[in-house]
Amino acid sequence: MRRWPLSAALLVILYGSGGQSQSVEPSGGSKQQGPLSQAPVPPKDSDFVGAETCETCHSEIVKQFGTNPHSRLALLHGGKGVTCESCHGPGKLHVDGGGDVSKIFQFTQASAEQIDATCLGCHAAAHPNFEQSTHGEAGLSCTSCHSVHSFANEASLLRVSQPKLCYTCHTDVQPAFAQPFHHKVDEGLMRCSDCHDPHGTFQDKQLQSTADDNEICTKCHAETAGPFVFEHPVVKAEGCTTCHSPHGSANPRLLTVSNVNTLCLQCHSGTNMSAFPNAVSETGGPVHNQAAQYVPCTNCHSQIHGSNATYNFFR
Image 1 (cartoon, rainbow, N blue to C red):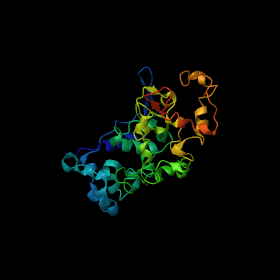
Image 2: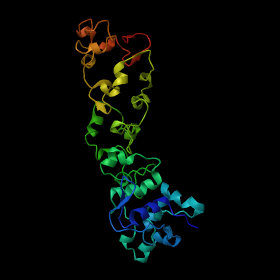
Image 3: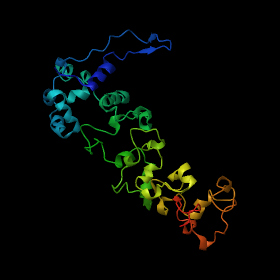
Image 4: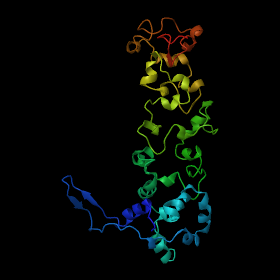
């Protein structure tokens, strides 16, 4: 007996009711929004025609499908799993109609919600937060980035490899990687998804979720992770991006400003030192002037991420 796939069930739920739905009142009763529809009926074995039948018209697609990770579906359920119809739904009506395109699920004609419901029928466990992600809220669908039949990256079926795929929308970020100092994304040593999860997280900018937001950076920059006896408060409170531009910068070490003293004095000044009473020996800022022989601050305060020796981050 052929077991029909979860994605086919979702198609039945989406279309079997004729687009009609009911909403539930807070009291527990239901408020009908249209004519009463029948409960969706699962497809029967006879509704599936098999990939061999699909190949009679779609030979090029079917021949290439053997290299596709989705082809493993054919090995499910004792070798009786379906492939084409796992995503496009039962094909009998489509075949009986002489190839009537209205009798089969077409991703190119479906809404983002319908596409996502089909894909998440199998991938929901891996991407449980997609609907709440920035991409989901923007109305992007799975096929905006992925293509089952025409892909540049076999591992994740991306339409175009990173970072070019990301740049198609994030044009404001692309110039940062052309700066003199940048993370090696364009060179192929890093990927956007090393730091960002395109399917959504509970962090800002869809950053990979970690207990410590700085862990996105310290997984590579381990020497700055600590723990330290004397922590630099801003590192824990505000994070790495307070001082560094994560994508690229005109300044060494991806600093947000060109002059290190200017960067330090944004916090360590006479107006701000009351918030850091233990940072220096007085609350009025540095005890010495900022003439050239003292530039930069890190000549002396070299352990700026944290120190196990002194509270003022000396060597």
